[in-house]
Length: 109
Image (cartoon, rainbow, N blue to C red; front, side):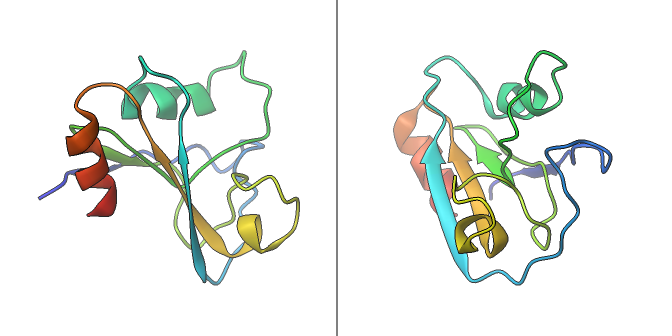
């Protein structure tokens, strides 16, 4: 069974608008970072040098998944502004480091 660790970014962070959403979709991306882990990706969301508005609900690697924003809140992961991608979907980021097959199995779980 996959370990899902809740490590929510602070409610005060610009990447967590605290807007409620009714989930209809799942948006899946790969991180584009071949050396990063789920915990590293989570840490990047609150790194003071990260000035991007982007965020996601959950990130997964071969060992764990880290939930960064509650599923019933909006995250900025779809690039569609106030469209359904951001306002009605859970954003799942898939890490590219480690055992890719295991990471994809974890993401499916």
